[in-house]
Every structure is written in C-alpha cells, then in structure tokens.
Length: 302
Figure 1 (cartoon, rainbow, N blue to C red):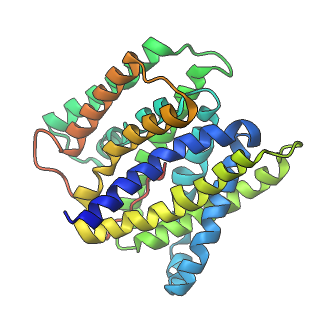
Figure 2 (figure 1 turned 180 degrees about the horizontal axis):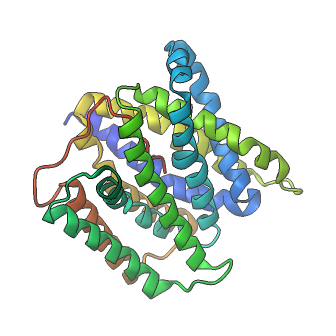
C-alpha cells in the first residue's frame, strides 16, 4: 500500500471515528432529530453539485425507489439513533458498538438471502454478539432515558446498516456507489427536514455545537464518502474495509482527548471481543478475506 493511500485510510478512520465525538458535542443542544437532519441536509448540499458535475442525476432518478430505502435505513434512521445514543453514551463506547456492523451484515445475509455461513463466520457472529452482551451486562441498565436505551439505539443502527448492505446487494448491483451515497443523503435530508424545522431548539446553540454539526455533514459524511470510494479504486475493497477496525480506535481516542472520557477495562474487553468477532466474520482471521465488488454500492455511514 502506498503511503498516500495509507494516509487516506487513516484519515478516513479518524473522520468516521470522529463522528461519535461530534454527535456527542451537538446532540444535547440541537436534539437527536435536529442534529441528524442537519447532518443529512449538509451532506446532501455537498453531494448535489458533485452528482450534477458527474452527470449522474439521471442514474439517480432511474433508481430512486431502492435508493430511497437506503436513504431511510442507512442514513436517516441510523443518524437519529446514534445522535440519540450520544446524549447518554460516551463517544468511545458508541464507536465500539458500531464495530459489530459486519456481524449483522453476515447474519442478515444468511437469514434473508441464504448466504452460506461457514464455521468461522458463524463463530464470528457469536463472538461479536458476546461482546455487545458483555458491554450491556457490565455497564448499562435499561430504563427510560437511560444508557440502556442508548445502547439499544446503537445496536439498532448497526442492524439497519446490516440490512442496508444486503438490500443494496440485491437491488442496486451495478449502480454507481457515488449515486447510491449521494442519493441516500438527499433522501435522508428530505425525510428529516420537516422534523428539523418543527423541533428546532428555542435557544440558540453555541458555536461548538454548530461546528460539530458542520463537521458531521461535511467531513464525516460527504468528504469521508469521497475518500472511501477513492480507496476502493486505489487499494481494493478488501483492504479498504480494514477501516472498520480503525473507527473504534479513533472514537475512543477522540473521546479521551477532547471530552475527557475514560477508557475502562470493561470497554477494552468489550472492544477486543467485538473486533475479534468482526475479524472472524469478515475473514480477516481464519480464512481468506472476502472482497466486495468495486461496483457494489457501499452503504455504511457512521
């Protein structure tokens, strides 16, 4: 891997890991729905001129129905769920839970599409779930407005990501990844704009919250997606997907540096278990890594 590609890979992990920091910074002042709406609206405004300049608007219109499903399940709802979780959970913990996404991709692919699951992938699924249960059992209690519901929101977002990946494989094969990424953000913006306007905070959010919302939209969504597709073109999808292992590392790092969050022994053990499960599920350990077709739409956004 060239140094320039490695730098982009590390930067992408830093940006997607940073999304949990920015959600933590902005969720209390804007509220979950408004922050999610600002993120989607800002990203859509960045993507629209890019779609137009690449002459991809017609392709988006031709596939708008499945792209709308991706916009709901991969952007709008996960943005809201992670923003809700950010009001109760440390940024580092949310980023660790996000790492279980490939486990749900494999599980849903097996249950829905009948994909084969060998012993290694099956073990990875069980190990990944064990990591989530470890975190839940050792750090959280489920009660209204509490951290338990925030954990459930994070897990729900990863389930939606898992569904979105499998849905895109089934319905959007061959469609430009840029069209899927941009189109899904535009749909998410349309879905979240009414609630963003309706629930706009009565007070004026402070500058750090505005900067967090701007960073989420521009850096962690629009710029990150462009970097993601550049990496796929340069180093291939299998190597690109190693960014999944960088996200929790940066999420924990940014939370500790900028929010003073503690990285507890419980979090460390849970993170190790989840990453082990993800490595087994994706094939990084135990067997040859499974590559994703470059033409296959990538759908996860954190």
